[in-house]
Length: 104
Image (tube, rainbow, N blue to C red; front, side, top):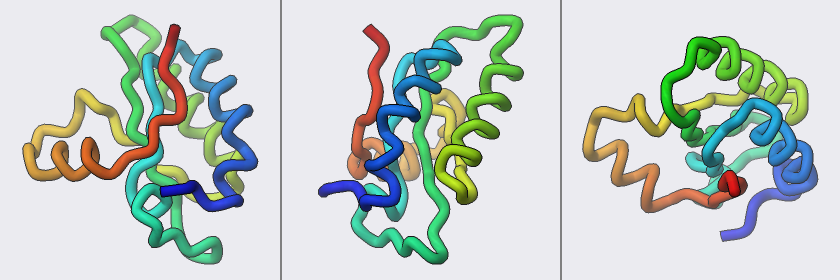
């Protein structure tokens, strides 16, 4: 599934944000990954692996969230890979995702 143009145009900048905040990976999930994205109404759902716990994890997460919203000009939901406890939700997000960034 291809990403909507409103999302794909910002991928280089999103990858730079991921590098800046030391993320391990970022994937698009939700409506943008499933092909149900409505440019006028949809938010953007990002599945993020923040890596191991560090003292500044909270600040990195908040700044990534705020910068991603500024970048896309819409609400962004940041979902931590470590925060998904429900196996059904985990399976859905793993099955329907478009990987955007993986740290080298």
